[in-house]
Image 1: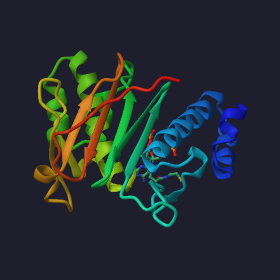
Image 2: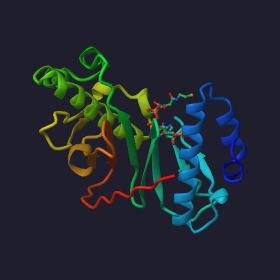
Image 3: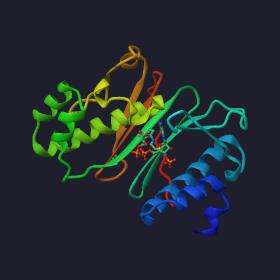
Length: 215
Ligand SMILES: CC(C)(COP(=O)(O)OP(=O)(O)OC[C@H]1O[C@@H](n2cnc3c(N)ncnc32)[C@H](O)[C@@H]1OP(=O)(O)O)[C@@H](O)C(=O)NCCC(=O)NCCS
């Protein structure tokens, strides 16, 4: 592990990093946490090693309110050499980035985990569009569940989203959250060829700003 990272990550993060079996997973975790600390430190006006986290019941990290007087919220996702961080200061936020795997049996997975309406929509388009639509649906659902902090404990069928390439990103319904379809916001974009990102905020918002950070 590189000194530069060791100085900034906490002992718990370094221990977690050492447990990864594959070096590329270790590298992805370390770089994401390093970037996370650098960016949050700017918002919190402190040193990156002095950013403290607290974890929700299902593992969602938050800025620790006992250590920082702030309403800042964030969520992180990583895939391959891409990490995406969403930051807000007014409501919960969830983000997911996925690589669009061409070989994935998208329809089989959708039939099992998506709602009947969503898998019927997937069946209605060409094979190429199907792969993109599946990952648009997947990232939107996962971003939603990450905003709620429940992760994949929540059935994917119980949160319906738009997924076809020609449709705008939209939350259709979330079981237990009737306000989601009109009060929450969803944003979807491609940060790089073959990668898709979705971001969900638990309030209405049209004011998204995307910044790129290279390391
Ligand atoms: C949250 C979850 C959907 C992430 O899935 P993923 O596609 O593997 O990973 P992503 O890259 O998109 O997101 C990972 C990041 O989300 C954040 N995260 C972790 N748990 C989270 C949760 N419950 N809600 C929102 N965000 C969460 C973390 O910042 C994590 O990054 P880190 O591992 O570097 O700390 C998945 O881990 C999950 O369902 N967790 C629920 C709890 C659980 O089953 N945990 C098993 C581990 S014991």
